[in-house]
Image 1 (cartoon, rainbow, N blue to C red):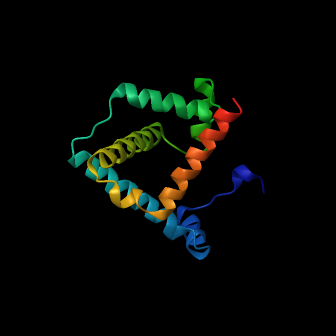
Image 2: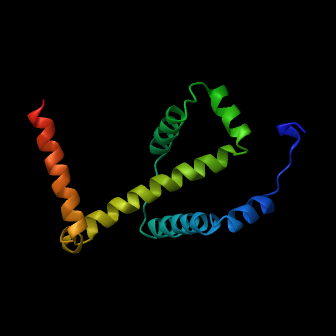
Image 3: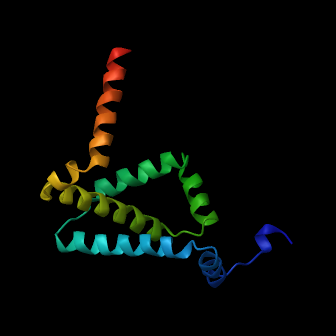
Length: 135
């Protein structure tokens, strides 16, 4: 049987993901995205057309889709509609803006006093110092 003759249902994919313990983490990511986008909208966070176009351009470059025909073929092969990809990219932008909002409005002392964070910052400072030493 040729690969293009093989039919796989969504139910089969979900069943496989559940049995292999991969369903719950994916479901959590989807729910996290939806909750975050919903909260971002409540805060009045929006995405401009130019931002969405830039995100689409970055997506195409990242996925090595140089020509429009490459992108169309990729979408077909992955069974993704233009609207679904656009919504995914828009949600990514909304989530990123929401994260920036949280960063601006959250008191960071709690996080900066964490030994893990302090260790990461110390390592970053050290790596920057090394780069300067060998520059």
